[in-house]
Figure 1: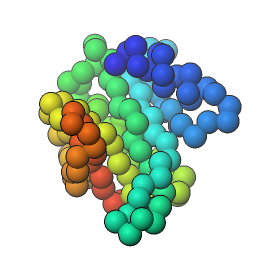
Figure 2 (figure 1 turned 90 degrees about the vertical axis):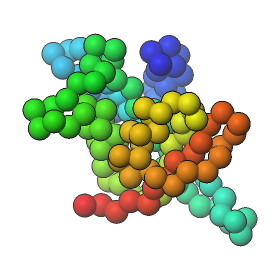
Figure 3 (figure 1 turned 120 degrees about the vertical axis):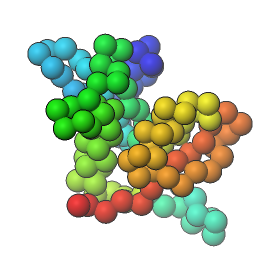
Figure 4 (figure 1 turned 45 degrees about the vertical axis):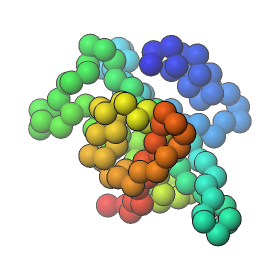
Length: 136
């Protein structure tokens, strides 16, 4: 994951113009996690295109995996909630998706806990999780 962030996400987030938004979590100048999202076009069954937002990445540093806040919330859930709030603040779409490897049960559980519950096949190795969100 670290290589993906360093080689793909960071250059894409710094590229101008970019449609990828990167959120970083720092603690005492140490990167503890990050999340990224971007718009994507999806097609309805009718063939009509519509705009959704893709939760592209949620990554927690190795030292901070499994970490919980003082209220018991998993740090990974806090990152997802921050990304979802940012997406809804931008206001381009209420439909949010993520792609997860079928065998990555932790990522799938993270998405499901945070409202991305509808699953469809993306390809042989991945599923797309989708949720329809409203601003709280």
